[in-house]
Length: 447
Ligand code: NOJ
Image 1 (cartoon, rainbow, N blue to C red):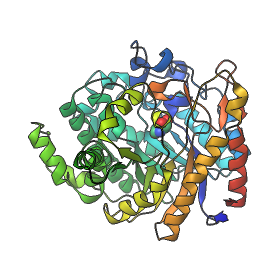
Image 2 (tube, protein in one colour):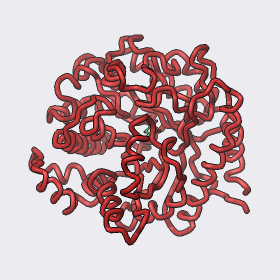
Image 3 (tube, rainbow, N blue to C red):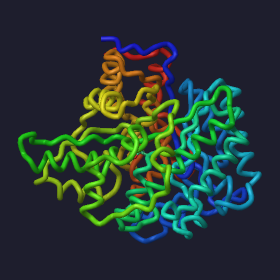
């Protein structure tokens, strides 16, 4: 059967600055929260640090060559705040600006549409030291950073994402295994509250700039939980908690419906969590965006009896690779939920999707990644179905262009369609890269 996508469907790949750039102190870059966090013993699998990563700071031409080889229509990357404004609030770094100018010029020369994220988790360390997102001044700091980006790149970037997966800020402050490594739920909720105000202020600022061709949105990942045993009350409660209290609901409700859900309010009351807010915050968070980016990897089935085992697996690093079952078919339900429950009425992009391989010295086996091809097919099929059923999805970005620094999982989880040799920094196409290039060329695939 042929799975064909519209002619103007945007096929792309995605990366993020902290995961690929390296050049930690090159070109005037300041340190980030992750540069520092990764040095805390035991935080990153096998002690991986992002100092060099894929060295894209120096190898940007090669990255663009790969994009050309794939034939992507768009590249989703992120700006590193510590490279643009090294201490977060002070002088703008001309070398940082020049780096992204070069990348964007190369993309444009090759007809590749830039899709840029303002914040993909790498916070200037100087700001983390002042409390990071927990400090309300972050709204001022972030808005100024956003203005520097819009003034320098506003005319050249077509798609602007304010924040990528704000849940990382929640996890980093509530569960300790992401930067900055704190374990305080009340503080974490304050951080994400302030973050969503930052988002809203950036959207308002963007509107004032009147950039003729640019659009702005936000990326929220959805890992939807379902009860493994629908008639087991504990499984049902667990799924509901993981979706609405500790998952996507804490963002989608304020961003698209306005304010926190009743369930989340109750949870906060029951736990003595009181957020510091300012008048107008709910309205600011709920700005009209031009598009929504869905990072989608898997659906999860909660079985409370197995929960302890699962937690253990996740604690050992990474997300997908430790989850035994693949439930990508839930994408149909997830996309309908965005439309029907959260009333998202703007175009949707799959802003990330992909699967990791566990590192092994057997490079051949990494290059022969049929499992990844099958996994992607298992996503594109329900995606096509949801589009047929009326969900307005405009594009798909594969995570990732190349193997890179996978946060707490370090270099152990390889998500790339290009293999990265971390010793020589050479990138080699995996079978999935060749397959994906064909999908792009043909606008779909036969299966
Ligand atoms: C989510 C994040 O946005 C990205 O940085 C990460 O590498 C992938 N998903 C895979 O875990």
